[in-house]
Length: 187
Length: 187
DNA sequence: CCTTTGTTTCAGAATTTTCTGAAAATTGTA
DNA sequence: TACAATTTTCAGAAAATTCTGAAACAAAGG
Image (cartoon, rainbow over all chains, first blue to last red; front, side):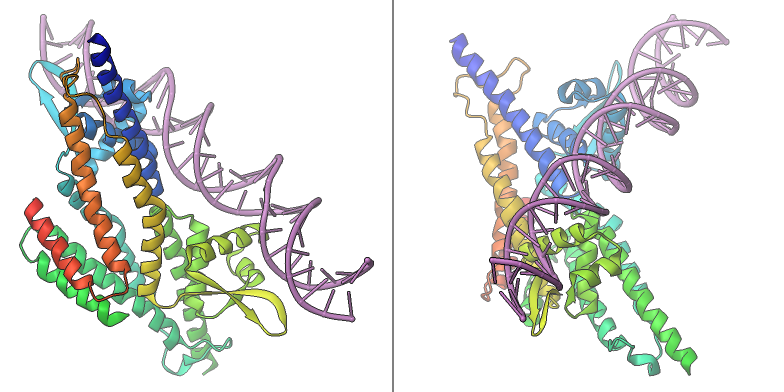
């Protein structure tokens, strides 16, 4: 009896640890600091608010690291601060809805990375005059710019799809359909 | 006149450099080594095959680094080796079709990262017996597993969308539509 | 106020990742 | 086979990133 309980206990703990490690690994593949992904994984899989000390203990990280990482997760909008009556500690709780999580991450990465990239790419097109079309190395400014334009038009579509996924309305289906048609036409 | 030509020249070179730097930055945001993204950007924006020495010179990197990076890009399938008659050097050429590029990257990241993640997540579900349902800390194995299942069902949809985008057929539109409906239902 | 509890900050340490350069391997040529 | 050109490899160096820990700061209670 206690045997079975014990085994169940080990199993769920092991499952948690494995999940945290897995998520951390995945995060670092996608440019997110391992610890940040691990803290998120921990909060997500626990499903209940935890305070800084609990996170520190569970992941064996320093107070400073826990503090910075939790703040980052809050800034990203995928973890929320929770206060408890009669407890001065701050607690943190991860968003439990996976789709909301996905949308939030998409929104942030679009805002922080995709939008600035598009903006800078637009500025980086060669503005050479029409006469100075052909370079010494045989490269034409037109061809160069055409490549940038192709990239930009792809990114414009990505941007559009993000917008449609992010906006709460029911326009998503139409947008996806549009995108799908676009893709067929392109290639 | 030479003034105008000169200006055009500077402009296109500057544009290239800026693009390479931008792409490198973006790459490192998404977990791709900066140099790898830069080499790719260089080959893409030049639009013509370059050999190892040309890449080394253009980006000011070592031979070893250039060799490894180019091999990686070839392994990823977004750069191809090109041979020239009467020249023993190997040349490298980047895929110019942006959609193909996107698909290739998607295919590789799915194969290397998403598929293994799904597989490992499935294995990591807590297999505790039904009796050992509630833990000391009040957490039920059922709730724990439910979270993993939600994540897995999201990943299954991602997987499906990837497949549809990747398969050359015209099923894409339908798949996207399906996905869009799914999303609405979920949230 | 002063104390206690809890949080944030950030300079330097530790770790991880990426890069270099020279030696070894490979490939094509004579 | 010998040779020259080119590419690959990989141990150690360099660079970039992440983490720690202690001091500064903030907030609440008395």
